[in-house]
Amino acid sequence: MEIREKGYRHWEGTLRSSRHDWLPIARNGIRAVFKKKYAKLIFSLCASSFFVFLAAVYASTKPELKILGELVRLLKSDAELFKTFYANGFLTFMLIVLSVFSGADLISTDLKFKAFPLYFSRPLSRGDYLAGKFAVILSYLLAFTLLPGILLLLFKMLFTGSLAVSPVLLLAILVFPVIECLCLASLTLALSILSPNTKFIQIAIFLVYVFSNTLAQMLKAIFKSDYAFLASLHGNIQQLASYLFGVKPAYHFPGWLSLLLPLGITALSFWLLAWRIKKAEASS
Amino acid sequence: MQEIIRLENIRFSYGDVEAIRDVSLALPAGIFGLLGPNGAGKTTLMKLLLGFLQPDSGSGEIMGQALGEKRKSLRRTIGYMPESDCLVPGLDAVSLTAYLGELSGMPRQEAMKRAHDVLYYVGLEESRYRQVETYSTGMKQRLKLAQALVHDPRLLLLDEPTSGMDPAGRKEMLELIRDIARKESMNIILSSHLLPDIESTCSQVVIMNRGRIAAEESIAGLKKDRRNVFEIRVMGDASGFFVALAASGWQAEQKDQGLFQVMPPEGTEPAALFRAAREHGAQIRHFRQSRTSLEDAFMDVIRGSDGN
Image: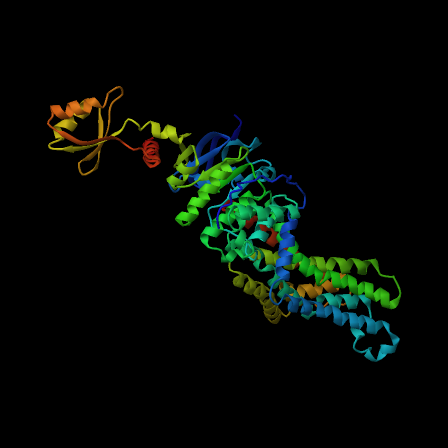
């Protein structure tokens, strides 16, 4: 490792300023998640829900497959189909797994390896840093919710040969996954900034999911009221999906109330992220 | 000459602890050593320059840009080599350097090309495809220098650049810093508690103590004040001799068994020392002008500022 004799040479280019300074962070993070061990397995499991529903959509549009009618009974209405696709227990669980897999270490490894001085000595604001990290986890979550949701809609149109779609349904197809993913992504990042120990973060994400459901069950047993499910992440996702898609609600309480927990989690997570990242920059 | 850094009455506190007290500084272009004991405020000052911290009061300019304003634009002109052992995991050295270049605003392709160049320059060309987590301390120091250089900044802030390096690696790192400093448009602030590092790379120093600027001048200037100091070894009964010296205004300090450091009053020739010895029956067996190291000068400045 000898020092070269050619000496230091200046770079002749020009540094550019952009409103998308966060983009390299997002690109690097997305690439890093994709390269992880078990990435393909987890992505396949997340995508499996889409293929099951695609088969169901196909079956429901083909008269010759009426034999499967009972199987696709729940999917007779488009609203029911998309609500079931987005809020089914398997996909919700896989989204938690995906959050753990793609987001738990996003900030915690930067804490562990003290990477903040490297980031913040660049022309990068705290917002850019968080936006870059947020984009990573949000991209993966939306890739397995919003994207397949849109694809399902397109395939349904293709199979039925009709472009007719209710604007309310279209809005629900676009809005529900965004709210769900924003909540999961912000929660994951907020937990990720709390500790340099990634294992701890991974366990914490699962605990929030499991504990909120257990708490809701306990409250339901005590108070005998469906309002108890307002404490459950999964329960709120179910109820919110029913509310937005206009189908029979899963629980007996107003659907709009189930917006509170996801929005509350998102707001609290953003506040926590803003506070912690300011401290992290100062101690860089 | 245009000043690269101008600070006026900067103050900063961590809660109740005043870390920077009324710091005013004007540094022209060039390479400067930032010296000071632990807790003197060197790293805090660097953080203020980078905009990681906002001063409680005071104002300043770095490379013509107001301190604390337009931080993005300011950071484009600064390269920072932190003291802490930091890295972005999961990347090899070339990807990491290119990534940080991109974050500085370099086009992607250019950043990759430049990353190869700077890694070659710092002597990491053979290990550039290795994961950075596997690097030794010395290699990490080189990598930190490479990432600070990747976007070709006008001002380089180096915080303890030789920390943890073996003697050979340290020598090479200092050679690199000297080489970079030879570039006209490159300005360097080198913070270190290792005086030989500063002495071998910088001609100007800023000495900090207890959050204040204790001295700001050339190394030669710091040493100059000590040229009129002599080392003597005295045999025989020297008590009368030293009493007489003190009465004539000489300052004497015992350094070792029989070895003293003496400083004559203004306008007195060293020959007066020998006359006094003869008159008081003392024998001067060793006499030489005291070698003034930066360490001596540094200690004098620190003692002086502690006294204030």
